[in-house]
Image (cartoon, rainbow, N blue to C red):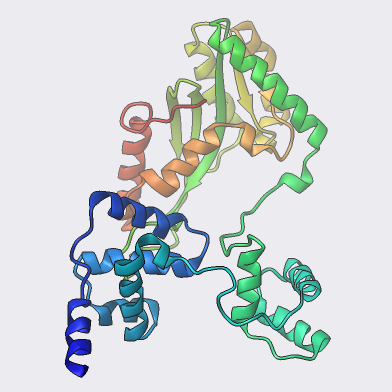
Length: 343
């Protein structure tokens, strides 16, 4: 009997045969299944199929050898159903449904620190709680741990924002009909302090990007909805005079009536800037100002985000000269090698 158990475990060291359909199914489960344990089990099968040993998988998921062997056994005997827990499995929760609602209210007040939530709840309920219990309640309520975004939405006038959204929709339709060209303008800065992107990385290793203080490269850009892009790069401070000079160039280049969407930065609302608006209108350039705190209505923001998070290579942050070279290459090839299809 003991010999049979040893032989059986030996056979279970690897998942050696998976069909293409099984691989696709397991990959989908690993990426998208709502329960983390099912995602772990699907991934462990894929890892085993790719040559990872059971001890390596144990190390990745911090589980014992018997647990991984059980996952493999259920896969062999039950298929995909063996990777999913049946309803009612596990120890009953120590909290009632009413208490779970209170837990979620505490989490809403302190979404960054479950330890604080636990301390408050233990004082309120007079019971000891683990962080795993709180996490399970979060997941059951559809909450996930993810990056918090900075937003100006709460500061803007929603009525003005909605009105501008409708007006821009009309401008886009006029552009599609060929009546006007519709373009967007904005400025952004680039230094040796990189925006840290997500990236595929080996397990237990981390890609490190150089980071240091440096001079700032200020980029002023014009982009059309067809992704025709023109830019000006400065190492010095951007003033209204600089912006006016760029707008003068742009007004001389347009071939048909053009509406240019801009934000309300101070250099766009100065007396020097405003005194040139009539001259630009005579050349066929109409300035459309967005409501304050409405960056999502300016599609050039997508260009800046793509440059910082996707298009600039990691090597660009080795030195200021590398940053300039890489940035100039990206700017020169927007609409050619680097393209965005604006809807």
